[in-house]
Length: 82
Image (tube, rainbow, N blue to C red; front, side):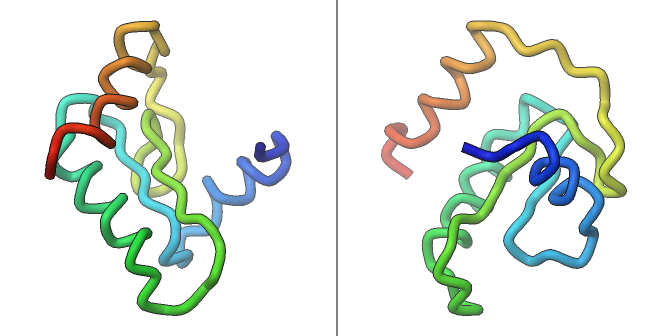
């Protein structure tokens, strides 16, 4: 689990190729693409990639409210067959 300091670092590191930020919760195809790219680990980072939902490309928070439904929808991406 990430610490708050580590998460803030990921939000502000705009050059990291293992972090994808997205303020939308409806672009699940984009989420799946990011997850696939992280799984391939082409740069050979040998550590996890992070998909941060509710943040803009510049690292600012979008004000997204996290609900149980949102968490269920995000978890379902891993088993949707794509």
